[in-house]
Image 1: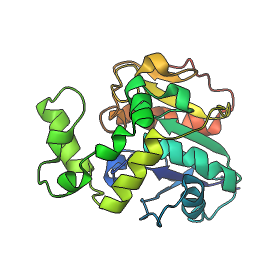
Image 2: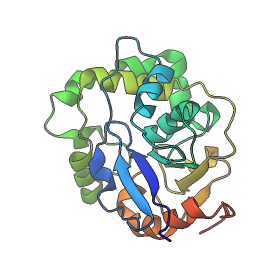
Image 3: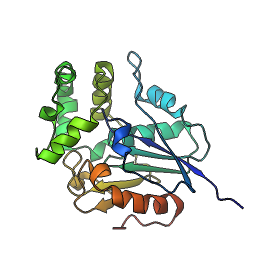
Length: 228
């Protein structure tokens, strides 16, 4: 008897494309991997309506959703329209209370509306907008993987990330987070699998951990959040 092939859908981070998952390899005899790419939002589209459109691209029942950063927020919103096997978020947050103070201030002051998306889009060097230590390798990664440069999408996504209003945490979400994440610092994050030395871009440079542990996380209902 052949084994069940489990559909696994990945959603990248804000402004990122499918390239961020290029090192992720799940056993093809157990998993069928698909990557959902960002859509251009409609005028004044709510995050709920956008999530509904994204969820329409998930064709199977009992699929697995895995989202990175803002993609982690999006898969949590998509869950309302799907019957999932499992939901996994990476380098993300489960409620507005896990957002860092600077983003909560940005929401209150509406400073996020001052983000120069036109300047970003017109720049050949995205690394000047990188957040965190500007090592050569980190800058190369920002330049290579921030590929979604549509102004309408960027303005919409930045606002929805900063203003995400979820207060109740879905306890079924499996949350994987790095202890060196500068975008969403670990001190605000509760009940997660902590990756030592993991940064906000650990889906790229800690891919061996994910290739080893994601199959177990998907298949094993008893997998502990204290796993290392």
